[in-house]
Length: 435
Image 1 (cartoon, rainbow, N blue to C red):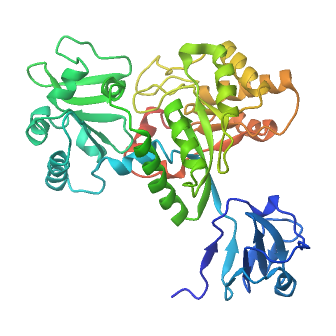
Image 2 (cartoon, rainbow, N blue to C red):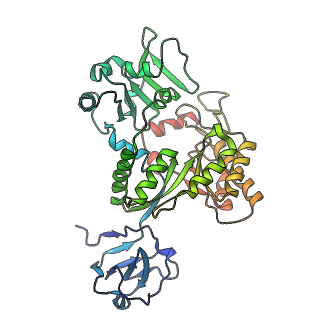
Image 3 (tube, rainbow, N blue to C red):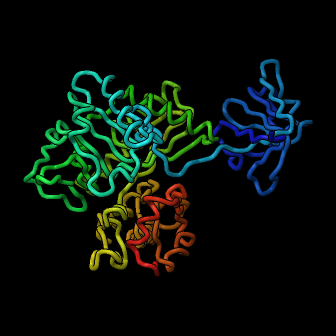
């Protein structure tokens, strides 16, 4: 048994933002004493006690000094030598949108095919009239080769459209009603960067890879506001259990924004959230005024919307991540960029000038480079300040661009979770040995 356990403060008010001094007003709401307090303050890294009043840390110091903060109604927790530290901030998370996975047919860690098919059939029996079956978590190996056939899913889910994905969501298995809803038929060509897998009769088999999966995903019914708020609560409970007390929600549309507002104003949030408002390419720079209005519409306690999310490229699995050199397994193909450099510079300069933090999805080294170029252009145009823009995923970076993150003050937001054996590392063969 561990003799010392971590005690994580479930407040997102981090110590380095709090002054280390004694409040002259006695009677804190909460006092934690007799602990090993890690402050993350270079001037005084360790302390014994903390006092909190009205949601603010009002004292950090020794046990003797905290006595004056204990009033008749103060809750006092004796840490008994345990460690107290600030909560973690997750720089790239989807607590509401991805939190809806808790509401889907969850197939994670189920043995394929027996256990997974049994769970799918069970989920189908709980559906209401007209409701889709939306599942998630099939192993990537299920989609190797041609994958499963729609007829098996038709048998399990005969009366509802069904859309079931792997963990990443890049590949989907759908039934005949879902193919019909999306108007996917034998005469349809594969979309760019996607594949409609076909059976021996050249009929869509029900497996959709890459951008082909989006053809069905885009017509899925939206979750209600109540379900979005439920998803937020479930995801927040999981985050809090790991000591995560604040996060950046990496992509928020208007429907999510409305649900966040309500959740915050009604006191449901146990996670402080900064929203990255979704940039929608079809509206161009003129949407900056809408984004400013959305940012100003938020006046709650634990939620703000002062970041904007742009997608610069795709991913490696379908050769859509933007590379400086061709893919090793597809000569002449360097992937895709959503924006040319001139347009991206214009957009980032405009957002930066409106005091937004910019959050860019950039997977390939070419996308990383144009993202850094755009931030540098914005700095040159708008002047120096504390920005903390971020590039997310950054799975492949040109060595010459590595020092630019520090020089430009850009947060390098990468996901160690993806650096594991299996589907993710299998993509490395697309680069060749040198890269």
